[in-house]
Structures are given as C-alpha cells and as structure tokens.
Image (cartoon, rainbow over all chains, first blue to last red; front, top):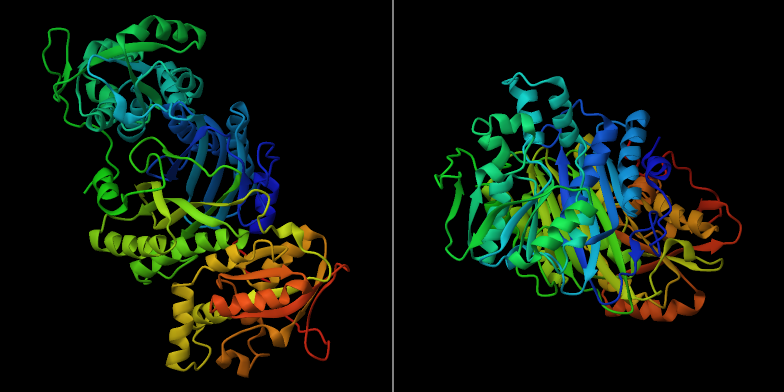
Amino acid sequence: MNEFELIQRYFTRHAANAVLGVGDDAAIVRPTAHHDLHISTDMLVQGQHFFPDVSPSALGHKTLAVNLSDMAAMGATPCWAVLSLALPQADKNWISEFSDGFFRLAEEHGLSVIGGDTTCGPLTLSVTIFGETPRGQALRRDAAQAGDDIWVSGSLGLAALAIKQRLHHDFSIPDNVMAECTQQLERPTPRVALGRSLLGLAHSAIDISDGLMADLGHILVRSNVGADIWFENIPTHPWLAKNRRDFAEIITAGGDDYELCFTAPHSARSKITKLSEELSCTLTRVGRIKIDKSTRLIDRLEQPVALSNNGYIHF
Amino acid sequence: MNEFELIQRYFTRHAANAVLGVGDDAAIVRPTAHHDLHISTDMLVQGQHFFPDVSPSALGHKTLAVNLSDMAAMGATPCWAVLSLALPQADKNWISEFSDGFFRLAEEHGLSVIGGDTTCGPLTLSVTIFGETPRGQALRRDAAQAGDDIWVSGSLGLAALAIKQRLHHDFSIPDNVMAECTQQLERPTPRVALGRSLLGLAHSAIDISDGLMADLGHILVRSNVGADIWFENIPTHPWLAKNRRDFAEIITAGGDDYELCFTAPHSARSKITKLSEELSCTLTRVGRIKIDKSTRLIDRLEQPVALSNNGYIHF
C-alpha cells in the first residue's frame, strides 16, 4: 500500500463543511463571518506521550482529544483538523484501528478532517485543529481578575496515577480503580461543550495537560495576578482522596488530565452550578484569584502544602 | 532550558497579523472577508526527508519552503503557520540556527508563526500553513482542460541528483554542478509570487515534490484528462541535459524539486512569457493536456521514453 492508497483508504472521509478536502495541495475552507478562527497544534511521540503498547484505537482517540481540549479551553467550537502521521511501517490493521478511534471522536464533535500527511518514521502524530468563537469572546489565559473563583472540571490525578503505576508499580491499587485511571489516561473526554458554554460566564480558561499548578500558573503569569488554591477542594478519585497527602503531587501536578481550569466572577456561581448539572460534568471551586501575585497551595488550616514538582517538563 | 523557555526564546516573534499569537491554548486570527482560507500540512522526518548532517539553518529553510510551495501551488498568499518539533535534545545552537533559517524565509513572505509544539523525540518537523485567495479563484488540481499547455517553472532533477549522488556516488559530477544541486535540495525557492500571479491565468497547478510524472498525474486523474509530455522540453541543468537519456528518471520522476507544474490555455501564452520575465523565473512549456486519458512521455520522434519509476513512494 503506498502513501496515496493509504490516505485514500483510511483518512479520506467526506468533509461536509469544507470547500475542498483531502487531495489537493491544500484544503479550502470558508470561516464564518464575524467569528474568530482558533488554531492549535499538538504533537504526540511514542514513549513521551503514550506507551508503545497502547491500543491504536485509544491512541487515535487521544491524538484528537488533546487537540479538542485546546479548543475547549478557548470556548471554541471545533470545525476542522489536519492529521500528520509518521509510521514505522504501513500496518493496515493498526492504521484502520487508529483511524476508527480518531474519526469516532471527530464525528461526535462534527469535526471534519480536511488534510494531512503520512510518512515513514518513528511513530509520531501531529494534529492541527481549527475552531471558531463569535468575535472577541474567546476564553483567554490573560483575562483572570482578582476576586475570581477558580474552577476545575472532572477529577484530577487519575491519568498521572496510571502512568506512575505503569512505570514504577509503587502502589497496590484495586483493579477497578486502575481501570478508571487507565481509561482517563487513554480516552480523556475533551470538555468542548463546557468550554463553549462558558463564553460570557468565565473570564479565563486553560486545559490541564501539565498539571493544575503548572497550567493555572500560565493564567496567573499572563493575567498578572496570584492565587490561593485549596488543596482539600481539588477534585480527585475517592481512592486518591483517602490518602490525599500522599498523592499531593499526582493530584496537583500530575498532568495528562485534559480537564478545564477556569476563573469566573462570584456572580457566575449559580449559572456555573446549573451548567454542571446540564452537562453532567462535575465543576468544583478550588481557589481564588488574588491581586497579590503570590501563589499558595494551602490546606484548610491555611498551611502550605509542599510539592517537589510543579508540572510536567518535556526536557 | 525547559519547553516553555525554549518556545519563548526561539520561536516567539511578534505576529502582527494575528489577534493572539504563541502562548495560549490556541492562536486567534481573523481571515480576510470574501476570501478562501487554504490549509496545508507537511511532516519532515530525518533520514526520510533530509540527511542527518544537513545544516540546521538549511533544514529550517526547507521545513517552511515545502509548505510555502503548497500555498504557491494553490495561488494562495501565505499568512500564518504553526510549527511543531520533536527534538532528541534541547541543543541551543541547533535550535537557534534552525529557527534563523525558518524565520528568515517566513519574513521574506510576510508569514507569521502563531503557534506550535515542542517535545522530546526523534527529529521530526511538522508545519501547518495558512494562506488566502479571493473566493473561488484557487488553482486546483481538478481544473485542467483538454488543449491546455503544460508548464513547468525552474529546472527539474537537481535535488534528486544531489540525493542520488550522496547515496550512491554513481556519477562524476563537477563540484560546481553538485553545489547547485545541493543548494536546490537544501534551500528550494518556493514559487509563491508565481502561484499568486497565475490566478486567473492558469487552470490548474500542483507543486512538484514527488517528480513531474507523479505530480502531473494527480492533475490528470482529478481533471479526468490525459497528457503528452515532451521529454526534450523538460527544463533541467545543462550538465544533466547533455546526457538527458541517462538521467531520464532523475529529471522526470526524481522529486524534491518544489517547482510548479501548471496548465493554462493557449490564450495565456504571451502573458505567461511576460510573467516569466517579470519574476525572473524560467517557465517552460513541456506538453499538452488531451481529452484522451492516456499519458505519454515522448521524444521528438513521438517515441515513448521508458521509465522504471514514476515517482517517489513513501512506503
């Protein structure tokens, strides 16, 4: 199977919302008038972002999910994506399963794949994704305001626990807990509907890919503010919560969560609580933005919780 | 140097034409009203697309050039790009030189880098590029018409000769010829101004990355037509032209040329010749589109020229 047959067979699906999809030197789209176009890109490398034995279908899901999560963090509606793959060989089964996982999630979100590239090389996946918001309404990192509540969706630390256990076998984790953690690692749910619903409600947002402390840190730096984060409030799995102190780093700095962290004014609380019910998505207040630029992770006695690692570093 | 410092130091430059550049979950741009947005992506892998000893500056140039070439082939004006890199280590000198080569070419074309991703991994480069044309005017592959002239820019075969010589040392090539071929391989000139000028003149276009026969083949299939290609007319280096028959495959199917192949009606000939002078870019008529779907590479006696390979295959 050569490159063109490969693209044709597994990656060419009808792109209803494009003028011209896969098969020319470029795809052609017509963005919506009076909207902002959002563009984000993520590259996944074997051994760095996923284990070599991950199922191709889960990898296809995750490759798109991490990119959808960036759209969610902007409050953008995802529209199009391009996908590039370097593959060690043209293994039809692998490619077919990967493509199933990828396109299943794409279809859930009405996203069209309009282009890409395939080449021979060490397994590497690169997606660029496009989304839209009404002009000027995006949830940016630089718009948090002193007094804002800090909110987090879902539960943090599950994916990081799955990685740590796979690498070090440090804990005796019940099978059902490990299964949930692995599911969260391999098939995260991008919070696209949540992000979109936060337009006009939240001031700022980010997705938690490198751990809450590191990613919230980006909001704080760019918004020129500080924060108190309430350690006991951070939502996590009940099994982790039982020994919360022992898992402090996994919960607050573990990474790979793909939940949203956002800040919103006090006045938005009841609407956000209602949204949580409507979307069946847990939303938890975990702290507050301060004008003072210090950042504290504190317990209920206002004592600092010590961490040796504040987030995932790629080098 | 961690990932964020790396991005900040070498890949964050002011993006005058973006609402929001590097540093949030997504970049934000506002495409021009009444224009089509063109999107293309290319991934480059060491050993597959470039030699391990290529200079980082040349690699930076080429990484962007192959993407600009896709915009040229659509007649699009390049506007923005995102760049993802997997790097085996954070080598500051390498990154600095790569970034210089990349940004020098970007600035020549008024292109802004608005986002990207860096990660640790086998050297892999992935660019997604964006450009615009007035609505409905793009040069597509599916619009060639019977009777069209087939044109080619520049000279073909130089890059392929450089690769072949590097791998096999088959020929005794004069140093100055080899230098020209290496320059063409490592620092191709994307034909952006030519592509843009062909809007309204040419019917269809493609860039020659996999060899003339293979890439013209894409136009023919999608336009549902055939072609006669006149072997002796295909422009190449004088050193190759001296033994044209011996180099038939390198000239017609070598790949990595990044010249444009386009088709245009007879009535456009004088304008195209004038364009060639204005842009100081050789443009040569190399054949004709036929209603009959056969494709022939023929010599001046109308005899077929045999080739064992019709284009570069990635697997």
